[in-house]
Length: 215
Image (tube, rainbow, N blue to C red; front, side, top):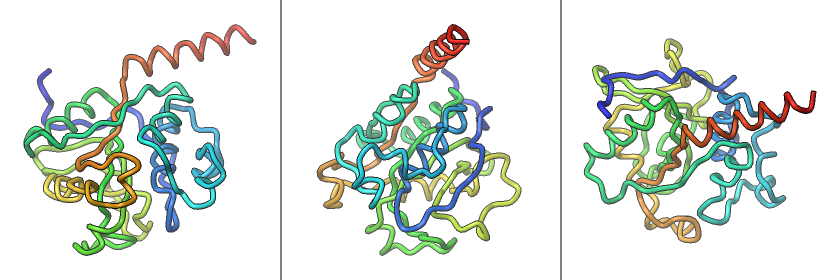
C-alpha cells in the first residue's frame, strides 16, 4: 500500500474532553467509540470494567483497553513497534491512519496541562493519546490529548485538539519498558493499539442487522 502524503480521518470524536489526574486511557477509548457512533457512557471512567479502575484509573493486564473496545465491536490489538527503525515507525502510524482508523498510542507525557515539554516528567508519567491524521509537509500528527487544557488547544485543526511533530511523537513514544507500572501490562517501548477496519466493519454491520431485526 502506498502511503498518502497526508490524511485526515473521515470520522472524528463527538467532542474533546479534558481529564483530571487519571483515566487518560478511558478518555481515549471514549473518543474512539464516539467516532464510531458507539459511545454510551456519560463519563469515560465508566468504561472501566472494575471498580478499582473507575476509582483510580488503574489498569491490569495487557489487553485491558483492547477488551473494552472489542466489547463494543471495535476489533483491536495491542502491539509494539520496538523492533522497527524510526522511519518505519512513522510509516506504520501513517499506514494505519490511512486505513481511516485512529491509533491509540502509549507515551511518556512531558506536558501535563502545558504546551512546554518537561523531559523529567516525560520519563515518569504514563499517558495515552489518539492519532487522527497526519501531514508530511508540516511533519505533524493530528492528536487528541485529553490532558491538554482547552486554553492550549490548536484552534484551526481539521481534527484533534492539538498537534505533535513527527520528532515529538517518536520521542514521547519511546517510553514504557523501564516503568514499574508497565511491567504487569506490557514492558516495552513504542506500544500502540491498532484497529482492524475490516473486522470492526463486520461487527458494526452485525449490530445494525440486530437492531433492524428487533424493530
